[in-house]
Structure formats: structure tokens, C-alpha cells
Image (cartoon, rainbow, N blue to C red; front, side, top):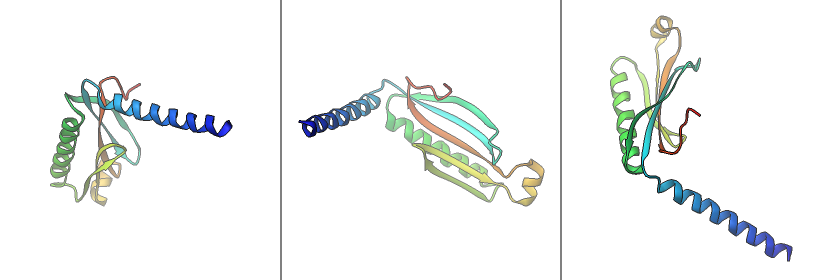
Length: 124
């Protein structure tokens, strides 16, 4: 009897996870959020809205384009720049050379973007 109840419980948990993910994917709008900060101090600019999109895929497409554009722009003056996927979003990091670090007072900076359903606010 216990093993049957355990199996039913596991099935219910799996169904709840699947249902929750399906609801998340069916959100009305997806919001692209951006944040940035100095490295390694972490002086962070709070999340702010970049735009709203009708689907997750369209939001992610814009997110990737922005990350690639920032990386391209920053690489004109900074040698070590990368755009990559991280934590379900995209991040661009830029690390200064020694002279740039001395002028700026920190090692570099990072920008991050994340697409979230319009019901989720990362500032809270």
C-alpha cells in the first residue's frame, strides 16, 4: 500500500511540474529585463525593462541580438569581451587590460538579460 501511495505521489508531483511549466510557457507576454554591474565589486544597476514580446522565442531572439551587439560594440575598445548564455538568459562580460583597470578602478563589467513572463518581476 505504501509503495502505491508513493508512486501516486511521484506521478502527482511530476504532473504539477509539467503543468506549471506549460502555464509558464503560455504567458500572455514575455518581458526582456536588463541589469549590469562592475566586476568584481558587483556594484549592480537594478533590473529594468527593455521591452515586451508576444512569445518566449521572440523575446529570446531579441535578447541574443542585444548581447551580440553589445559584445561587438565593446570589443572595439576592450580586448576580452564575451557574449554567452547563462542562467536562462544571456550575459556579456568585458574585462579591462591593466591600464584600463587602473583608470576605471575595477576589472570590467557585465550586462545581463533575461526573458520572463509578464507576471514575474525580478526586482521583487
